[in-house]
Length: 84
Image 1 (spheres, rainbow, N blue to C red):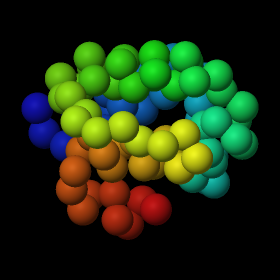
Image 2 (spheres, rainbow, N blue to C red):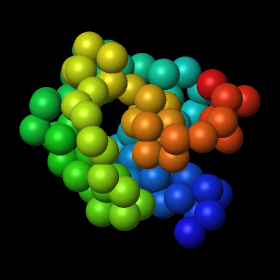
Image 3 (cartoon, rainbow, N blue to C red):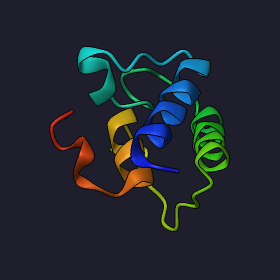
Image 4 (cartoon, rainbow, N blue to C red):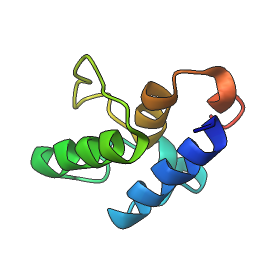
């Protein structure tokens, strides 16, 4: 699976959770700004792992978690440098 198809799948998962990735929405903190419950954040991470068939090794602190950070963590490349 190439990076573009992974990115499309990740965007689809965020859309299922009602999170828009347009403009500054992708930089907002899921816990503080979007006021998501930690259970839903863990569910989102699980759905991303399932869709992208990638496992995240280390925990991301809730104070820093944002959609763009999650996508970058799962794709682990410089494709998103221009998207930030």
